[in-house]
Image (cartoon, rainbow, N blue to C red; front, side, top):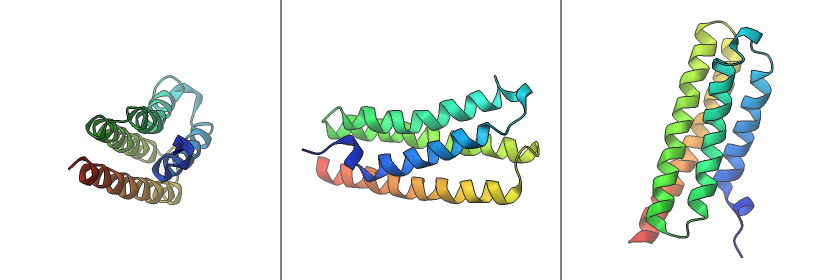
Length: 120
């Protein structure tokens, strides 16, 4: 039986989500209900959408949830740019997270292409 935990894209994005959870602990307190909340929500949305799509057992629905996850991944990137622009994080930390996000995006796009080929 194939489990969610066996899904490579879920494991990779879970690690990225954990990196974001660590990062927000160092953001200023006045960003708690703004940037911190947005980063947590968007990064959690990535893995949640992948999990929900995986549970649908229908290729087209799974693809749609993965597209939602991709949108949330890029939303997280935008929030990271805010953190960089506001000088809440150093450029090297941003670049590290950007590289991890790019890897997530590459694997997620590959998974979407896989699902599209299985659908046909």
